[in-house]
Each structure stands twice: as C-alpha cells, then as structure tokens.
Amino acid sequence: MIRRPPRSTLSSSSAASDVYKRQLRTKIMPLPDHILVYPGHGSGSACGKKLSSDTHTTLRKQLDTNYALRANMTEDEFVKELTDGLPSPPEYFPQNVHMNKNVSKEFKDISSDGFTKLSASDLKQMLDTNVKSAELPLLVLDTRDAEDFVNASIPGTVFAGIDGKFAVWLGNAFPEVNKWRVAFIPKDPSRTKEIVERLSRVGFDKLVGHLDGGFKSWTDAYPTRVLKSNRVDPAEMAAIMAKTGGKVNVVDVRAAGEVAKGKWRGSTNVPLSGTGLKSLSNGEKDLYIYCAGAYRSLMFASALRSLYGYKGSVTDIRGGYSQGIVPSKECKAFITSKPCPKSKL
Figure 1 (cartoon, rainbow, N blue to C red):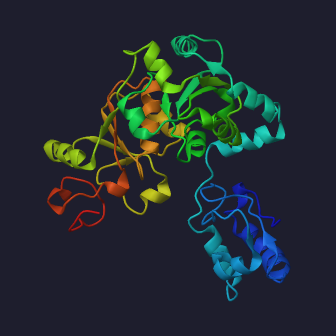
Figure 2: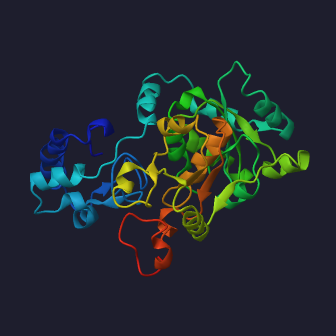
Figure 3: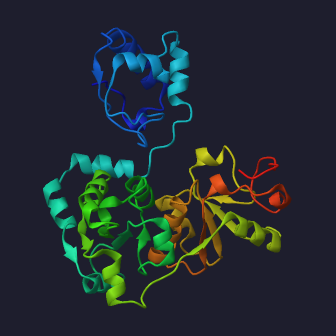
C-alpha cells in the first residue's frame, strides 16, 4: 500500500514533496516490475485527480502510464503536477472524518434499515408529516433515470439517479449526512443493496427504508399525486434568451474549476453544495439551471423545489454545458463566454 497525505492536506506542496522523496522515488519505483498495485480510490473519487478505473495493476504499467511516475520528472514538476487543479474537498468530507472517528452503527444495521419495505401509504405519511416531525428531516431519493423523474415524480422527492455519481453528488448537496433520515425509490429492486452500500460510503447511515414495488406502487395508489418537472432543451433555452434579450436568471451549478474553463454568458455560479442550495432557498426569481451533463442540475432543481420550498419556477437544461453551444446565429443571445463557434458541438 502506498501512503499518501490526507485529502485535506494534499494541496500542500510540502506534503507532496514528502511523497516524492520518501515514498515514490526511494521506496516504490525501485521495486520489481511485477509487483501488484491496488488503489485506495477509484475513478471519479474526490480524493485525487486522474484516477484510473483499474481495480489492480502492476508497478511496470504504472511506471509506463502514470503521469506522476515519469522517470525524468523533477521534484518541482511533481509537486506542481500533483497539486495543480486539485479541486477543494467536498463539504461532506469533514463530517465523514468525524463519523469515522466515532462509529456508532455497524453496516449490517444500516443495511437492515435500508431493506425495510415501505408501502406507498407509509411513504405518503412520512412526506406529509416531514415538516411537522420532531425527528430528523426526511430526504426521499428517486434513483430512477433522469427523464423518468422529469416526466413524473413524487412531490417532495429529490432526483438521485443510481447510474451516476449519485452518492458523491448527494454528499455535496447534503453535507450534514448524518442529520437526514433517508428513504429511497429504487430504480430496480435488484439494486437495493447497491443503493444502500453507496449511500453508506458517504455517511448516509440513518436509512428508514425503500418504496416497495418502486414508483409504480405509488402511481397505483395515488395516480394524481405526481409532479412533472420543468426541463428545456438547449435550443429552447436559446429561444428564451433571444426573446428576453438575455434577461433571465441562469445558474451554473458546476464546480469553480469547471466554470474557469468556460461558462454560459450571463450565468451565475452556485455550485451544487449545501451552501449553494441554502443561498438560493429564499429566492422567488424563475431560475434556469445547468451543469456539465444535466445530472447535478436536476438534483439541484428538485432539492430547491422539494426541500427548500423555492417560490419561483425552477427549470433545468437538458444536456447541460456539453450540449449548450447552439448555431452561431443564436450565439449572441446565448450561451458561451468564449468566442462563438461556427457550428454545433
């Protein structure tokens, strides 16, 4: 196992220098090529950058492909490469550190609670009494696909599609992870265990159960108690921008590092985070929200509406920033802080 400094100190050049001198160059790199290497974190983790999806590898492969293990790399180059562009740790990390030092619930108990089956009537009662409850607030997650959620969802629920970095983004949005009671709507009953495990990894350990029979059981019981979310395509957004002369409230919920590389003209950056959600919670303006690919924006929009009672309309933009550049004739009215392109992306 290769030691690295804690995520909270990795941005320190002295910590990076220590890794370079004491570990990689003097202890690890001289080892035989066939030595197996197992990662402490995988692709998509907020604990580093350029992390591979490989579950194991060899030292030889790492020496050939790892950006931090180039043979002719100087210490200064290593420190700069390791620390440059490293994002700030998510808001839930400090809470996780505290929880790890004060473990109060075993995983088997968390898992058992997550497997509790809730009827549609059970869930309705929880949602109806959530605001008045003396217990911890209730967070109900809908783990179905985005378009399914947009077309019909249960009022009071938050989008958290299982086929994405849903636990990480939830940790960002609700960093006080142990101060929520959590119920969820499984996309598929066979993935209930996966959902429970992924939630527990970021500290959501106060699970109260899942909707038995999934979303269909709700619509069977309460066919008129469903909500359609606001979502527009980039072309529709371009038309709105043109019609209003750009006088609409566009919110970019990506991280600051992403925004620095380009954003939609006139947008305001409010990253998906507990702080970001609370900063908009008392607003009344109509909002149009985007992220990189429309996952975080839908989570942000649904959380504003369901948990914070946002009074204005909230619309997320399908496809997000990656799909948001439109033909050049529309560009002056829309969407990028960089020079207008001559064609669609």
